[in-house]
Amino acid sequence: MSYFITVGVFTAITTLGVLGTFVLTGLTGLFSLGQAAFMGLGAYVAALAVVTFHVPFPLALVLAVVVAVGVGYVIGFTTLKIRQDFFALATFGFGEAVRAVMNESVKWTGGAMGFAGVPRLTTPLLALVSLVAGIWLVRNVRGSKFGRDCLAVRTDELAAEVMGINAFDHKLKVFLLGAGLSAFAGALMAFFTTYVEPAMFGWMQSAVWIIMVFFGGRDSLTGAIVGAASLSALPEILRFASQWRVAIYTLIILLIINFRPAGLFGRWELSFETLGLKRSGPGPGRRLPGHAAEKGGAGADE
Image (cartoon, rainbow, N blue to C red; front, side):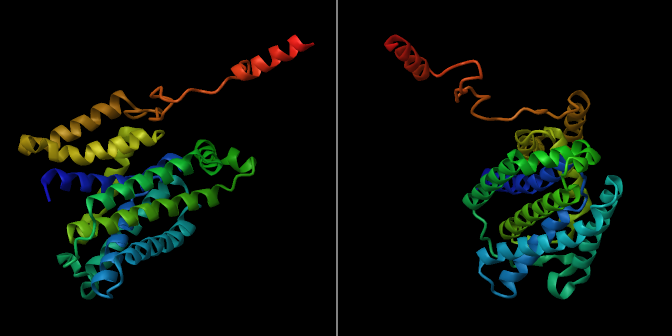
């Protein structure tokens, strides 16, 4: 497999994982430092299911998502009622606890040495289709009444409650959606790298995903996708700079955050309307040509 295809697959999988952070931070304003832990859960559950228990690959992907959502429900139900800053600390503790379990369960996970021998079943096509499906899902959730209610909760939770919106219920559902997306990305990652280890899923990875979301713009799905894709591929693009690539990477992020606080894209979304490919319908004061002709004909008959 060529180098560029490999980078592209890694970028697609990372972007899918970042979508889990985007729905949580973009729709509810919550910061989770445990999203990478859900990715790790998905990776290990799917790898164990296929390698140890000989479960079919498609079923292993589903199992990874189900386990992550189940764990996410327990964590979300017990932490989403506390303040946002304490929620971030709680998810940090959850992420470190998951990584500790992975390190200590040597018999099942291989411990710090990692879990090897995973077959390469994630193809570039599967990664691309999964990313497109994830984008479609997040876009529809964000544009639905549920998504608008979540934005109301993010803006003013008390006012949203007064208007009859169950803030806790909405935040829990979004948290579970984010967990499922991250777990699915982790499962794809395991079957592409053919090896997973606990160090891949630390809290720093979750923090990097939050940076990617804010880099592109937490109010823009387009921005989150571009931010995740560009910052995932950037370290590889900067390989020519050798030891300077980390400094350049950091400098680019700092410049964007300082000069574009709302992110690279702000609230802008890529759509047919913004590209001028879709004609807008008639406004309140405009009539369709056919309707005007019919009215004119009726007047003439009178």
